[in-house]
Image 1 (tube, helix red, strand yellow):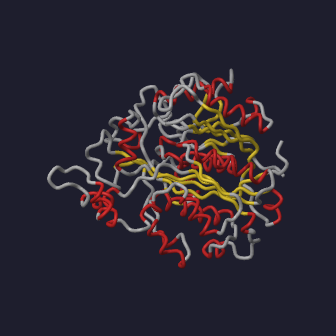
Image 2: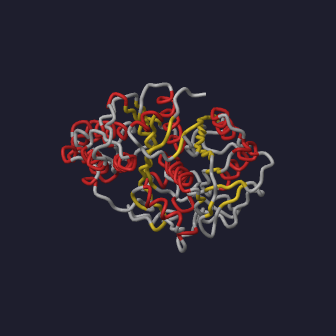
Image 3: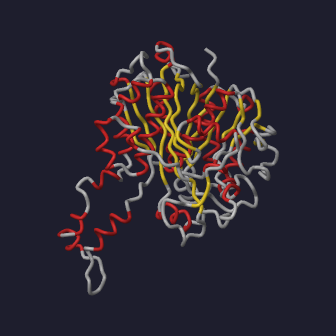
Length: 445
């Protein structure tokens, strides 16, 4: 068992349903969909022109005035992380070195920067294609059209800003967040695809539990709303085929007739704290983290493990860490993407874990939010935190025909009152072999 108890005091999210955890929760309860035609770029040549985009925002609203110049070297993924960081500290009423956050929590106990850590999951950040194309255009042999390395060195690379690379390094999400909020305790960047958020939050959980920090900001962010992000998923056969005429029903988790995922973007950062520190500063405690586990799938780097062994191992390890049996789980948060092979493999994992249980309350959020890489898991967890906090199971979009052999039961017509004491959330990488799970419970003192 962990020596220090770790609790969640704040959630900051940026999702297709809006900025902030209230926008996420209210949207889910109202059965809203964040899926629609892609606006970020011309998607006319793609199999599907659907995406799940975060509504417009202004970065100046999320950083101190003294830091606004730095927003020029923030790719979309980095922006989402910085937006979520401020939302999380506001939600937790946590004073950091960020003036905006301090204004929101006047009079509260400030966190010691040397005891404030960060663990943030990131994906493969897409380069600005127009900017890069302009530089490459000056580096071609005009006669043959071939790329000329000498011209690139002499002319092409100088068309890019000297700080160009800093916009696209995965660790820059954590870099900007820790600078803005002056988080000086242990920090890390985790790049394990869709499992990144869960792994980052699990590491933060361990960091606080062993006494290396009092507070951690943790989660992940990623945008796939760019030509490369969507095309990669299309080429590997994961993107939904069709559905453009009815975007809200295009992604159908665990539906036998489903034909793929909708690519999206999102970010989610949670504030984790040592229980005694949280109590000392009078924080509102939303939930407690009691278990973390991981497991590896070894069959393929780009196909699901049909028997779900790796995913099941992650959940079993998390439950063992929490000291819980599968029969004690009140809520399951699935990762259901709408990709048949992956949903079938995930269902096999839940069957291994839950055994002969039936009608286990479950959530599947990607029918409304799409799949957003490293940010997806943290948004799922924010939904779980709010479900615990409100004792409510939100509806899961497009699960009316979900085929789970009676194992899982999704709310569909509307929210369902549900006494939730403990919940488990699973995430797994679509490419790679990482699986991770976290167990949360209602805080009861």
